[in-house]
Length: 223
Image 1: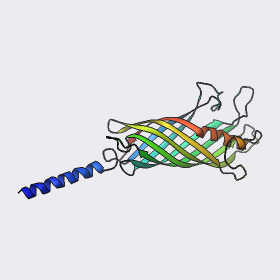
Image 2: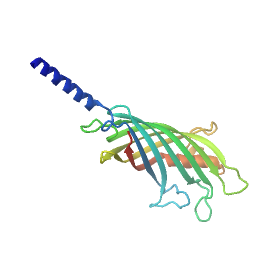
Image 3: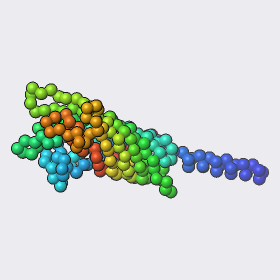
Image 4: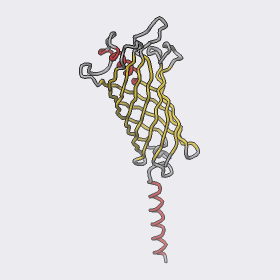
């Protein structure tokens, strides 16, 4: 009898340990989220507006994440950027040349080892990479849109809170560095900024957009 009781206790503890080790908050591994990303526009005017202390460049982002273990997850992201060109301003101080970008990325997160934390709950560190499909449109009707690609490396940190065992409230920051798709230009940055080249100005503009972003988001545990 005692032997059977001991065997039952061992089985119960093993089962409980298996449940505890199950990845994902309450066993849910998939999550979907929408984020707003803010870049201060003090020296980098936002779309259709002049630079200023209370002006921000705002980028929308949608992400899908999958939990790999109690402390790690992997995800995909999509961003839509709509802005104006840099150093191409008229009398009003607002650029007439428009820049658009569809950015696709992949990221990997490591969650902090802390009692009670389980992915996607808690503080995390993240890094990843992405590809950006961009377009420049000049105001002249005779000008054709110019398409070009760029690539980016990203890293950052944040924190997820779980509300009502289903909703995700997220906030954090991200640093990004963008690489050009043009061999003649090398890395994107001030060194490769040409005043009379709309495409290179657009690359420099997007490079500045990627440098440092603050973000806040809301999502849900899907499955």
